Length: 437
Image 1 (cartoon, rainbow, N blue to C red):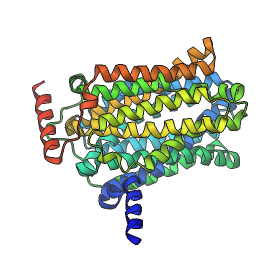
Image 2: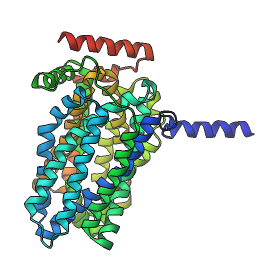
Image 3: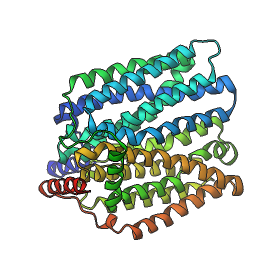
Image 4: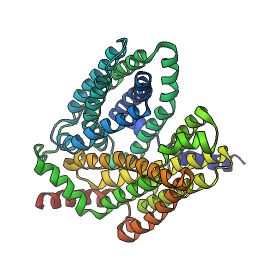
């Protein structure tokens, strides 16, 4: 009798997120822990800054403008940030970006302490922080493959998503408590303090020097990264399928209208609509232990995006029951995290180290712009045909777009994970192709 129970427990452990990178890879563990603590602080600022803008302007337009102010530097600086990450010591670059981001949070503290801070100054700080983040993101993402062996890279990426979703759920709650007790200045100050954890972790890990064949940052080096992505159709497929899911199936801009006019749940319901996908993603990341063992990860991505589109479609159809609608959003969040881990793993494993920063920056552009275009698409359709029709049509278009992506990129369904030797050879070949181009 004990033996079946052991088998059952082993089967359950195989589903849980793989903690091997945290246990075995010291430098990844330090980076991961520092990033989780600092991520909580960043989430507090993400909530506190729009709250302060609302208090100053009492206009939702000012909050919408904040999103545009933050998007512009991401579009401008992320490709250049990836080129810089490939050309310098990534550890040193991360120390610089963390110091600059801490300075922007300190600026928000000083502004919040004024009786009536100028709105333009808040936008200016947000612009600078987004621009620095556009460099920090590719550097951090491209550093991970240098801190863990290839066989543990999917698990490391899943752990990153787990920590990200954990702070995405906990951060807004923590921010609300801090703001209610001490105000927005204290919330920004908490963010400043959390940078200490990230900086200490970075100081404790070894340097991450650039690849010997790395090129100096230039328009030519940026173009090299774009050509590499363009010529690897499996990479382009991962970008296309994510854009399909986010542009057509992202209804978050409709959550206020749905909460107030369809579900009639008020502000509390609005909060739950925002939290449900993050909770689903958190659960999905926690039970992602099987993801790294998929031999055909492309098929896993297709299945996950199909689950996302179907869940969004069901969410739009099942508006008679708010709890069931929340479950649909949670399922969508879980499917999304599976797709994200698999897509990121494919891109990181195919890309040679000297190009990882630039490919990470292109990936950042895709995952940043897709949801914002999706918000615009959902809002435009809702203005003409109503929010429920917008959600349902978005789910349908996502599924139809998925069929188109699979037909246009057959490499996605055919892609197989390589063994260690074959994968290493693939990296050498990719580096040689890149040098020839």
